[in-house]
Image (cartoon, rainbow, N blue to C red; front, side, top):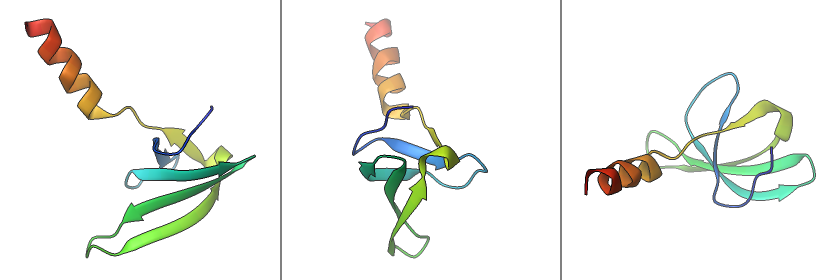
Amino acid sequence: MELKAGDVVMLKSGGQPLTVAEVKENDVLCLWMGMEGDLFRETLPLATLVQVEEEEDEDEDEEEDEE
């Protein structure tokens, strides 16, 4: 899996979506907002993440198909 800044990922074990801020070899710096609006940052091993399909792109594709 090749990630870049701005990609949305999630832990393989579940949880909320995380935004990729930086990728260095097999380490991925992720950012996310907590339930109270706090910003969290953590470096996670690439092997623990899966890339998430962005829903906005799917919605745009559906709108284009309807036209």
